[in-house]
Each structure stands twice: as C-alpha cells, then as structure tokens.
Amino acid sequence: MKTKIYKIATCFSVLAVMFAVTACDDGDDAYKKYIPEDGTSYLGKAHSVVALPGNKRLQLSWQLSADPHVRKAKVFWNNGRDSLEIPVSNSGEPQEISILIEGLEERKYSFEIYTYDDIGNRSLPVEVNGEAYGDSYISGLANRSIASLELTGGQLYIGWETLTGNSQTGKPLGVDLKYVGSDGDGRQTRIALADYQTILSDIKSGSAIEYRTMYLPDSSSIDTFYSASTRLEVPLYSLLDKTQFTKLVLPTDNTTLYNASYPMEQLWDGDTGSIYYTARDSGVPTWFTFDLGHVASLRRVRYNQRTSPESVLWSNNNPRKFEIWGTAGTPDPDGGWTGWTKLADIESVKPSGLPPGENTDEDIAVAESGEEFDFPSGIPPVRYIRIKVNETWSNSQAIHIAELTFWED
Image 1 (cartoon, one colour):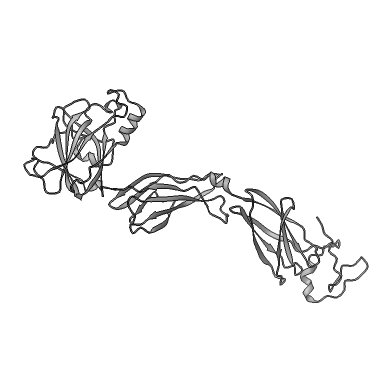
Image 2 (cartoon, rainbow, N blue to C red):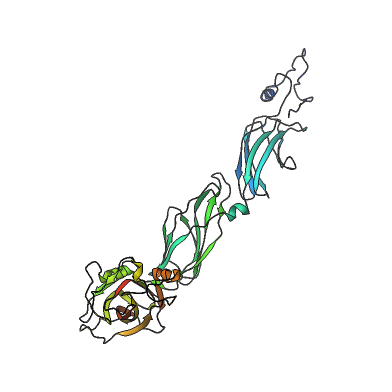
C-alpha cells in the first residue's frame, strides 16, 4: 500500500503546485530522494532481505537505507496476526538489521517488513519467504550405518557405510560420536563423511559407543540438525591380528593339500570365500598347527565352514567336531602332544537339524556368518594352536575350512 507522509514541523515541506520549496540545510538532502514528483513520500524500505532457516525458528536479515527518519521496523507474518518490532538506532548511514524469530511451527512462512518514522508513517512493504524446520524433518534423518565394528589390539576399528543426502533431508555433514576411554572418562569426536574407517585407540572394552549424524536442510541454515542416536556395544574381547599368524609344520601334522590353491594360510586371510583343503583320503582324525604371533588369553573363536557351492553347506568335508589345543612354549619338535593343553571341544550345530542338502534360510545365514564359541574360563595363555578334526559332516577322509578367527582379553 502507499502511505501519505506529511511533514509539518520539518525544515522543508511538500507544498501544492505554485508554491516554492522552503530553504533547507544540507542535512535534508538525503531525505529528498524519498519524495517522488507526485508529492507522495515514502520512508526508506528494507532491501536485500534474506530468510535463513533454523530449528523452529528463522533469522531475517536485511539492509536498511540511509533514510535518517527511520526509527523502527516491524515484521508481520501469519497474515498480520503475528508481528515483531525492532527499534532502529539511526545515524543516517546504511546498516544491516538481523533478528531471530523463535517458537515457530514447522512450515513455510511469508513475512512483510515495514519501516516507520517517529509519527507512525511507514514504508512500502518488502516480502520474503522462509521455512522453519522441526520434529517432522528430524524424524526423516537417517543415521549413518556401520559396516563393521572390531576391537583389535585394544583399538576399535569402525567401518562406515556411504551416506548421501536428498532433497528432503538436505546435506549430511558428518557423524558426532561419543565413547568411553580406557580411563573411564567420556570422549567425543567428529567423523567426516569422507572417512570410511575410524580407529579409536583409547577405548574401554565392553563399553558402548553412541553416535548421530549431522545435517543441514539448507546450506544457509542457522542450525545443525541431528538424526536419532544409535548405541552399539563395544566388543568385550579384542580380535587377534591375523597378519601375525604363521603356518607351523610338525612331524605328525597333516601337510597334504587338495591342490596348491588351498593352502593353510587361507584360514586367516579374512576371506571366507577361500578355503584350506587337505587331500582326499588324507585321513580323519587329522590335525594341523599354526602360530598366533604372540601369547594370548583366548576368549572366543569363530569357525567359518566352506559355503560354496551351496551343496557343501553342513555337509561334505566341513568339520563337524574338532578340538582346539594350545601351548605357550615352543611345541614338542617330534610332533607329539607333550606340553599341549586342550582349550575347547567344538561341535558345529546346524540350526534346523535337517539332513545334508536341506537348508533353511537360517541354516544358510549361520553358515555364512560363522559359528562363534566361547573358550572355558581358566584356560592358560597360549601362542601356538593345534586344530584336531575328529569328524566331518559327511564322515569323509579330508577336511576343508574357510576361516578361523580368535579373540583375546
């Protein structure tokens, strides 16, 4: 709308045609540009207005012209039902005004900004649209997924999945992660989206990590938003470093291979698709030996059977019953059992109990993920491991195993 502004007590007046303009001092020149030729005058209005989104709030910023008569500004929204008044300390120089409007509902808004002089005259309106975000937006934010979580050598290795934003969520910034240090004190760190592995070298085993993903719904947002937190338990035991494992051959061990493509070293190569495979008719019971690389107090073992082709699942030469033996000292060079301690009797158990060749989804899932077994408490620390296979699923005279994994205190 246009508002007529009549100046009576000022040093100049807009008069009817045929009257001269009264003399003014130089300080009035800045105001004359707000007096159009038709005699209607307007206060200097806001310009370069921006509305920056936030969490149930918005920030409005604009430039105020050099009109020396502006004394305040008002912002209206919700069709004029809500408003905010901003006093203006005016020296006649251009300035920037910035305000926060808080306590907003989560939706889009249209704002009108007016400027006012001392007697209530106002400028032309300036409109700007903005959006406030809130609980509904937050509920749609996905937390970054963890692909792997392993405690190795006292260090926690976190593998991250890829995360990208979309038009609804905006841009993910990274991950805010909290954990407990080995001294029991809380720690906090931020993980960049470009990082696909995080190593926490000072973490308390058996504690927990908690993390959430940070987002900006818009690059100009004044607030950072967070997804719901995810809490994961830190493994109680530390994974043994398989790069330290080495093959050890003793005189009574089975050293045969089905062929050269299936060596013992594939038991600890981290690939369950590769296997260790002894020669046909090489005998069962049979045993083999390897070095863990250091003396360890073992707490858990995972056994991965061969899973490809599917016909070998819970069948064929996969071990069904085997023993794990260990010793801390150098093994008896004659290949005997002197100095060895039995650490565990292991029996592989098919979840469904169905005969070979008949597998449920659970059977397949367990075979692919591996079976985990806890060692009994009180076993001695060991460095050398001997696996003695007593029975395969098909009562065959050869064995194949995909992977062996160990955890220690």
